Image 1: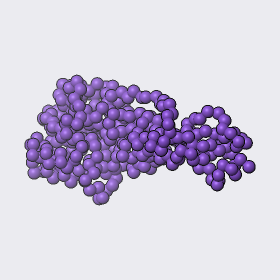
Image 2: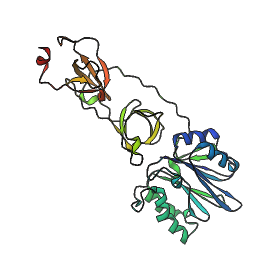
Image 3: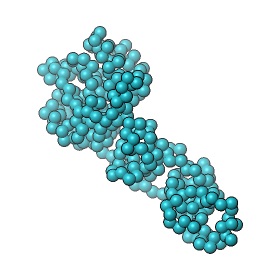
Image 4: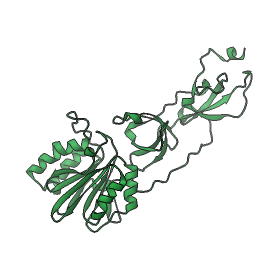
Length: 324
């Protein structure tokens, strides 16, 4: 869901923080800086090297830096931040402003339309509106949990919902996706007293999920949670795709486990198609199965966990028919 960064004059954002921010938010970058009473905006960088080459000469100046991950609108240069509010003011945004009307052109992001419909008209009446508390309070009510950074040509800045981000070594970050992600490895918790209620209702590393991504249909499908950012983004390894993609949690849903204890199941993947197993319990997105031997007369081998999407219900009337 993006990261917005604010560096006052004389404070340099560490390059590694910029790299991590881009890696976690790879859908375009940009920055605004103040110099000689002028506000400059450079944006539309779709790779880190081009961004850093443009940014480094200005890294000691007061700057608002943004790395985008698509939630609304197209993934293109036009939707990268910052946006110009007026001649002497720029804005960057982290979050989703769901109340803004995007029906006029859905290829544009919610931030684009919020700037055009709300901020630009206010700026035309009062170019210093955002430095006045009553305007900040009104905007805060409108944007909810989103965070906005405003920078003007003097290098003066203000942050709406500043307390929802963090200051670190003189730089303000809207979330912690500037930090290196330490990925967790998946481990299977020992199975205990299987019941229908043991399926988790929250995401965990290794959870199987479905993705319904409005603005990039190529990402839709099933995958596995690889890591969390600590914010509202989650790293998902999609089936059939290379690498791990950061996706906002609002587009990620747990792959529902349709099985229950005592169900009879067979595998979907074609291996041992004539072997039937009995569900002993549910373990997250997996099913604990005890398999019958080839004769159907007794259970063989220990119970083990298999992913729910690798199974289907056994379509017969009962065990007696299988054993005949």
